[in-house]
Picture (cartoon, rainbow, N blue to C red):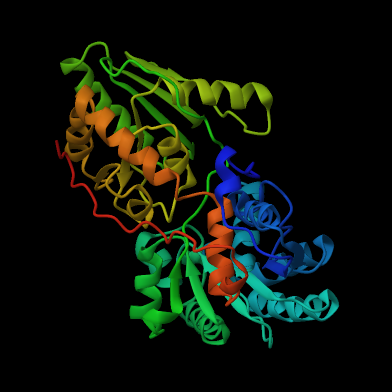
Length: 411
């Protein structure tokens, strides 16, 4: 979703007008493109005074759909139980194929020629290559080796040769970029270790928040947990329910609110709210209410590159129980507790620690202070610095907040 600049955005450094292109294989103005990050970065740049050029790296929709089917139809592992699921798998495999990457690279170069003079280019994702003389910064939340290690869907439909080809494309994207910007240091470590990129070229810039629930007084005496995630299975919902059931025996007044595409839930203390859209006024208001009355945000996902939801929860002064599978612990820092997603007892232990009012309130205050450094205008300003345009900033930009992590079940 598109982020509204926070109320304190006036304190963000401003710079003279610059012309910056945002390149991505999709419409970077849409609020539902890549979790809203391209549109939110564009809004952040505009709030800072930049002229934003939207550069779409893939062809028009009809050509793209045809290319997706052509690239994906011969891939292994795309046959599903229903025709609809099979078509979806074929499209996903096509989108991830080296052939589509090369098509996107060609199209991005063509669109770049039409864009006119630019002060810099922000390339979101490294599944395509932009050959340019302009200052170029990549921005992403995960590398291919990390996606493979975490078992992200879709990669199993590519052959070993396809994966090698995609890694070569990613490597070349890093090579031609002036800076490799990442949502978290976790991604940067892979760029250095797996691709041999100089650590000095890697810039953690963070993410912003698409929903700012704000802070309000809450009763910390009653543990109120909040889960927000579309993918019920992937976000580890079933295991969380089992852990909460055990916690409920110790804290009979504890509650768990569940938001997302979850199945019907009938469990003591648990309320399912279904999917709440930020594009809908009613859904946004309900979600804001849930954030404000909760005492802890819990999302022990099986994999999570860098979930914006943690930052949104932190902005409401909520401590977070965050998965260790991915880079999200870098976002939460010491404003929460990190858990292994397969460790049900570890999740229970973390919830026990957050059921202590003093502990939850203390970590919530830390989370709120950290969230002040994770906004889209600040991400945009850090990207400007990475592009070598830092001299246009009125004053220094606070860096990505690298802080120590809490351990599982700390108290």
